Image 1 (cartoon, rainbow, N blue to C red):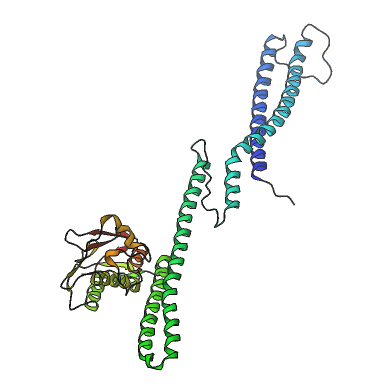
Image 2 (tube, rainbow, N blue to C red):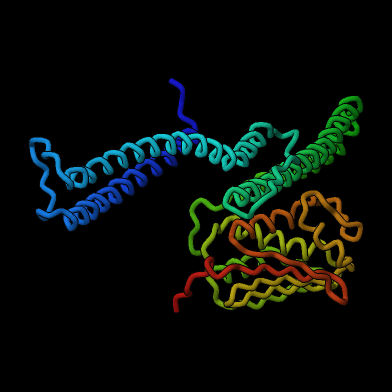
Length: 368
């Protein structure tokens, strides 16, 4: 059974509305006209109101006048019925044409959606014309395609960078194994090198899993004492070469405690790692939901701040061999999962100031 298309349904609806309204209009007009016509004829006949006799009226001067209303109404009904039939046929044609014209943008959207694949996500509908609901739909679809294209490109770059990062330690491990097996004297050195690269690979895989989990979103958020979590992270990240200060105000937010702990660890570890001996790190938390991590260290160009939050991106002023370049990108993903916004700005005397602003909906009242 062939399905009825939207064009057929719109045509049927348009024709049905026209047929019903025109029929009601004709019935009402003809009924009113019939009453008024009989009343007028009754005024000019000598015997008062016109009474329709069973037998034909006898010939007389008013016989034709008494038959006039029925003849006029019969002719009028015939003309209106023919007119309605003709106009109904015209309404079918007009409705079919109008519905086709109205649905043309929708067919264009459908055709574009059917052509889309990962290889041509750059295609857009770019619908022109009036600013109506269909144009809004096309613009929304184009915006969705743009976001999808950026997401796919980001995933492709991420996969390529992850493959590159994983290939390097694996190649080093393979070379170390081959050389070490040939020379037994080098086994302790090979063992240490393998353990080092194995640990780096394990950290990279763990970071990738955390990043994927953060991008997935929160499944079951719960109240988290962020102030206590900040103090715990600061205690775990102490360094003899770095002076660390902490100032916190009571704050409880809804979120994932494991991810929030990882967010704090990444921010504080980044501040400690990219510092200089004798430098300092300050961690602050306000009751309004503002978390700040400020450190001393090398100068970071302001125009390259955005690169810090991209996966596997390292600046020449911050290059280290003990990281995969995922710390701040993971922190940004965890912040987005908690409806928070993370920003960074270079300090005048060197180093960075990182700020995480948690949204009001994520905070919960602190019990006193």
